[in-house]
Length: 190
Image (cartoon, rainbow, N blue to C red; front, side, top):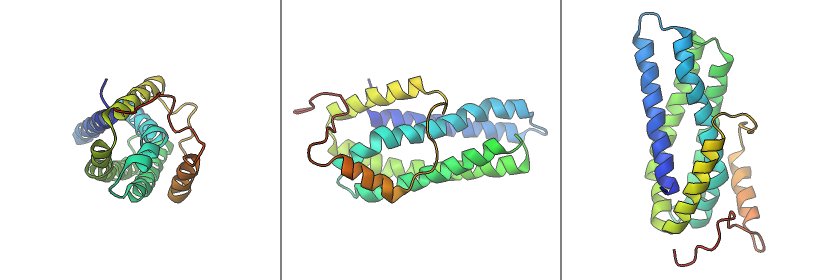
């Protein structure tokens, strides 16, 4: 099983491929809305599920293990996730293929592109350098399981989060006497 950083990178590559498919469709003289929807619906859902999974699994551990400004990286990431969610929500509320829809998809793409670049340079790199491989693999199993069981946003709260409140709540939850193992057992010596 791959570690969580590899799984997140694989999702990033998939996002890039799906946006490229939309580029090809947009280049057609008159793209059919059903063709656009066939690409957009799973892409929009996965953008939201991916953000939710990162916020539930990856970023709490980055805040505990990162050493290259994990709080700043996390605050920025949650803000980026909000921008991505806003673009997805706006696209889902617009008529597929309309100018309004393309503008919303463009906003989601721009926010996602910026987020992926920053996350790949900062958060993922920081975590690979400072978190033990056993933890990264355990989190990878948890992330893979979550993504497999949540192909859509059904049942997930994908509303925007206040970045500072998110960081504060993670830091409060990891205080003395709390269980931060995520049910993955001991990772000593890994």
